[in-house]
Length: 281
Image (cartoon, rainbow, N blue to C red):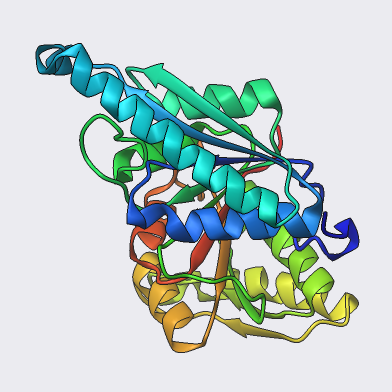
């Protein structure tokens, strides 16, 4: 087992990796095992076989074959985890709503973080399609890490997006904590849609700078003009960011069933991993 003192994210006793066996999940699998190793976490790896009336005509043989393939894949992930010294448990579920099944499993197991691939495949194993990932993040009881296939988290530079909302404040605290443990530099970003918002944006990023300086961290503040998700993605790509941390919801999305639209679009477009954080209620 890895030493918990090197855990990048505080308190990760239990992790839930949701995978659909597609190549898109490879980044999530790799980072989940890395986290579990570094944090001495228990790792649950699950796939959801979607039960849908439209598939009944396919026949039970096809469905049984799909389930056997899923079991084989999950066992291969478990073997990879075991080689890394990680305690791993395999879970297969059948559900009409894969996203709800993942969220329920996370709640039941009291996991500290869910890890997902960004996109998935269609059909019986439709677990991590965009809309499903969005619903998981919107309803999850914990933080959610979304990892594109080729992304690797090295904790060199963390971008934290803030708009002053309670969820983005939670994201700031999370980003500062990760940077402190890993020696990362912080890029604080508050995007303005018009000049009238510039003072508020400056106040938002200055709070981040103050928190970072108190912890002895290197930090830089930006308040660019534009559409928030475009600016966040472009800045992350251009500045060598390997982890974006942002709130599940923003100021306009606190009561939405799904996550805020900017968070959703950043996750869909960013080349690096995105950690979505919610304020604990």
